[in-house]
Every structure is written in structure tokens, then in C-alpha cells.
Image (cartoon, rainbow, N blue to C red; front, side, top):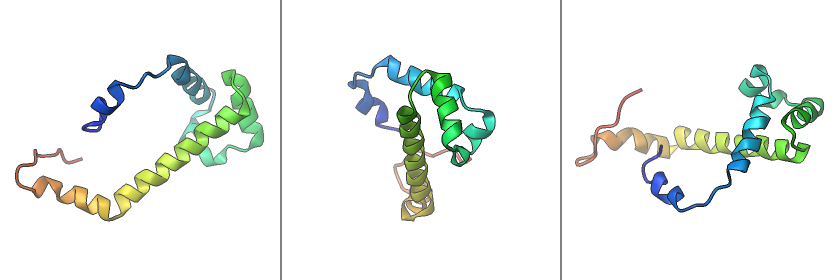
Length: 100
């Protein structure tokens, strides 16, 4: 978990059914589709929607959210933000971060 996020989401009331539909959509994908969601054409999206018991709009929404999150993470790691995060362990008073 990201530091500080636990406190932020603790007070949010989330419906478990929302996660169930997301899980159903992901489980309806093949391993290849999970690995490379850009290969999802209209017929694949229709199959996923039918297999997950959702509609194609929900499948499209999940894929769009995933793409947006991927772009945001790429920006964070490939920009000055990523460089700043790399220097954080050297700051005095900061706990040591594990190296990956």
C-alpha cells in the first residue's frame, strides 16, 4: 500500500459489488488479453462482456481506466518525479527504502 493512502480510503464506503464486476471482467479475459489489453477488439470485448455478465460499456470503462493508470505510472517513473523519488533515500531523516 502507498504510504498515506490507507488513511485516505479508510473512510470511503465502497460497494463490494463494484469489485466483483471488475474481477468478473478480468477473469473473462484470456491470459494474453490480460497481458496485452491493446489487442482487445470489438468481438473480444463483446465476448468478455457476455462472459462476465456485464455490458460492453463496463468493459470499455475498465480498459480506459487501466490505460489512464498505465500512462500516469509511466509519467511518474519517467519524469522528474521518478528522479526525485530515487533521491529520497539520501535525504536526512527519511527511512531507508528497499531497493528492487
